[in-house]
Image (cartoon, rainbow, N blue to C red; front, side, top):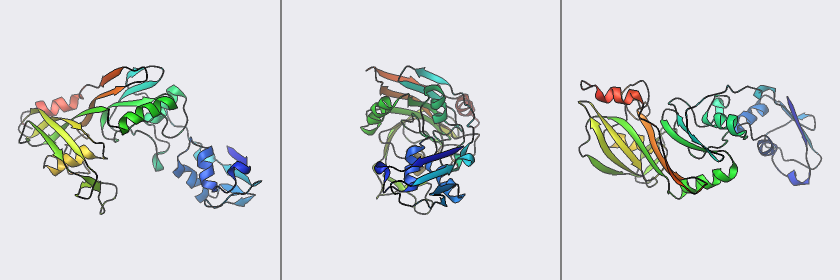
Length: 289
């Protein structure tokens, strides 16, 4: 498959890589960068550099064959849908949207594309759940709904509730963890509690305990990356199965988004729920740990 474009006045002065990203939103930027590395993009019949500035009349030709990968269909449990929103129960192990080397992996975004026929690597994605986290995830079937829902996440009017199984027995039945979070300079893909970080607050409540584990309800008041995982590790009770943050080995990360309260475009305030996975109950009901 080949893509060609003749540059007009509107696109004069733009970088060729930036323009291709605008014109081909169905591909991640990292995938398009791969075309330059493979010398599959020409500018006026010469191999193009990604930073080349464009002039009126220039001709771009890109061989998209390396990106012609069929993303396998994926079927996810639907909690609710109408003409504007699609709410799913995301399984642990499924990514929210493809990126980087995972651009051809089935994801929540590819599922939304199947249903709503939107384009782009992040089609319909309002918010994210980590790959290993399961539970309620709301997506948008159109751009107006996407903006409407994202605004509620930005102004913190969405109520998110999680459940987790953590190591040990927490000292109090309810509590608040208030610790700023920032990126870990020694391990950039992770985060840590640091006084110079961004404000981060989590409320917790114990639901059940056995000799080794506690089942806790978690209500984040802020939405930092890995917030719940970091906060629980910092108080000495890491989430079971959390390889990044010191959790004991398990079949999966024992973190589940159990409910999401949000106003949908028809004006109704809705609470969407996803039942606690069976493996959580199995672990917490085993009194021998």
